[in-house]
Length: 434
Image (cartoon, rainbow, N blue to C red; front, top):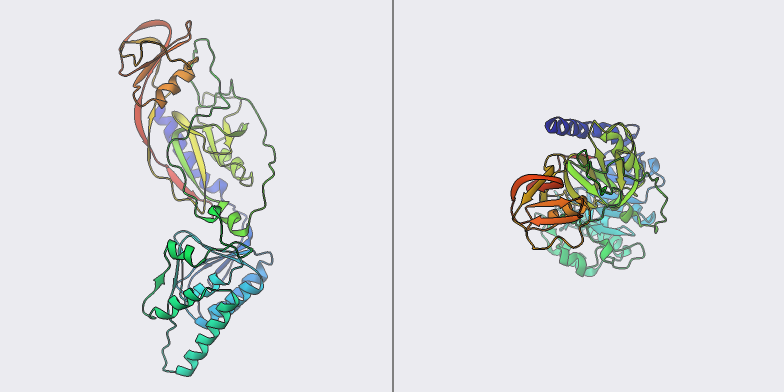
């Protein structure tokens, strides 16, 4: 049964790709520039700058009249074309951004420096101009154009110095320290960005406990604990939240661009809605359409649950917990790295709980746990304590006993016990939303 659930959940992960991708979105391509109807405020540049790039950029601007941001990924190319496009960016007061895993080098740097707001999360590189001819006069005129244009963008003199000192067959890539020193990042008002303008790094440690949708009965259960059990979950509907106006770059970097999906991982806490969906893909879609308010979801993949909510939409990833019938997803922004594998001690409610069984011996303390008053509290208290390998909970006495080892299993009326195992969790799949 457990293998069947995992297989079904993984199959759902594959079909999420088609359900959450904006199939109706239309992309228009103009040379290295892409305009996506789904993101009309962004023009994406991916490719070299050639003699037709300035005209293609004008076409992209015409196709996206509401554009606020240009994302840059280019190894450079024709200097005069780069200067013309930089002038357009400056005149239209567009923001410029170099995403992670992208590079803006050589002539592309002029475009970046033209941004009214600009930010480097990838690589920014500069060097001297190069020419296939020995036209010294032409080269000097080009250098004069570069200085004139970059001065209009308030480019620091130190940046110009680095540019003209770096040989054309070399590339100076600015370090994070130089980016800070030369104020290459700037907000819309030209001021140096605050800490909020730096790349976000996700917290990969297991989230803290914060359960909001599931409570545990104080009477002995007759079925295994389900993730976000429909019998006890509170059905809610999302409420609009007023958010501060974000800059174009902040808007872009906070916008989800991929989703990490997990099987056997249950996320608790931060629930903003609990609904009924036909499958995990529909659950993911319900989260995605909430315009950034929903950051993660958990879907109960147990086929025996035929009524009540099975999809839980969240404002954060909440607390991680192992549960073999759970299927979860976490939306990632462009500023976040792919989540690494993490280890978690789990007591799976589907396979590691034993009713009317007492684990005798191995107690961590001569007294019961002081705050765990329900079986759920007891299980989580053991999960959270690195010394704990098992637990036994007495329903009639409402006592939780944490164990440093798995004691001798003996019959125990009205007692539920569970044992811990350690698992590594990594995304079953990372799906691009672009």
